Length: 321
Image (cartoon, rainbow, N blue to C red; front, top):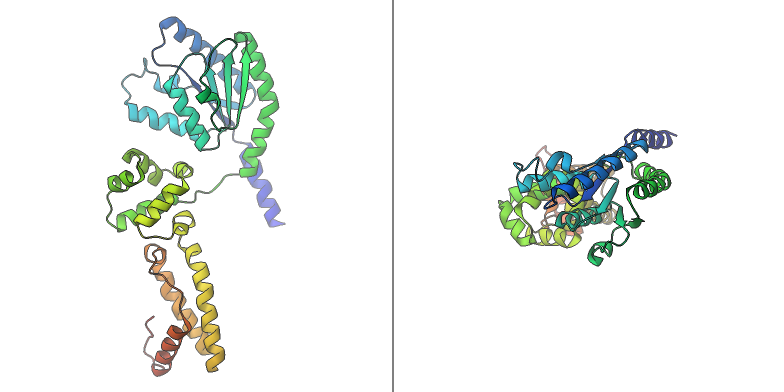
């Protein structure tokens, strides 16, 4: 009953948050007339989305190449990327050629953000863009009124499914992959640039991964494998932490202790003393040490050694595992 109530509460809370969309369009190198036309269409689309419960982010309102020319390129990338990553939908207005639109499209693909391409009939759009492996739909239109009518129909049909997707996923908790990479890298005294070079990414990207939980989904399995190999870790630790890494080893260690207890007729009190003492020391190591390959399955022979030490030290001395 409590689980059902929690799930319902999560869905309710999720549905109270407006859906977020991002509008990608050409901005750089537009002449003044084309700029006014594109910006006018963008603003009309923003108003239209608002009527359907979707908050549409317009990049030119925050990082316009003319009005905000003083904002650095890395800052523009950081801000706009974050907006794409945290969106429920990407709209791409294919009104003019744009390198930025291609970037935003790939960011959406990497983070599972569905895309709607808004293409005016007769306009040639790169097959590289339309062929990307995003979840996508192409909306062709004749003119601005036709565009608004077709986007209205699209939103009417797709907003409910986007809301269901949001509710199904819920307010997810980060896996803290980046935090663990940062922790182990620092403890291993590995400079960020060295690890970034190993992965073939800019130091800025690695910093984003380590410091922003929204970016953890952009890390590929191949990159995690390379980090794990370079830092001498179990890849499972980077994904879900030290507990999962030790679960199987802990189970096998306990099985070996049970086997010894049966063979040597060990008392229950001695069994518990050994097991609890061992667990206590392991809990103190959880984190960096428990994540390394130095962590091992305790063999029956090792348990026997500790058991004999314990019997010899029953006068009160602590057993060191």
